[in-house]
Length: 81
Image (cartoon, rainbow, N blue to C red; front, side, top):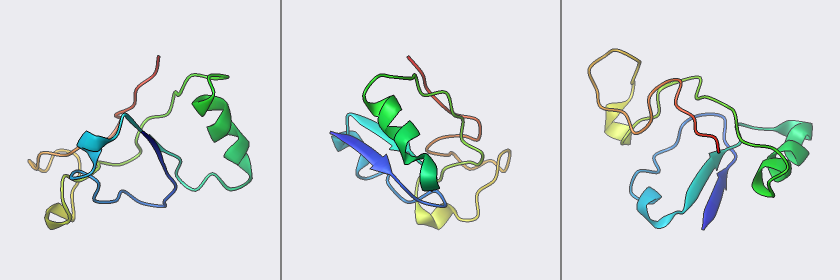
């Protein structure tokens, strides 16, 4: 299952992540939603990096790079193929 998460901030997804094959954070694409489809269907490789640290759980808020908390995904994380 590929999950496309359209949100304006990191969400608490750590418990669900093991059931997903892939997670694509679309970050409020607005009129550029076609670009998300291009990535999903192989027209373009994903190239984005997280602009902020993604928490392991809500109890970690606030979380910032370098504060000693173990993130789910660190700032700058991103995969491509």
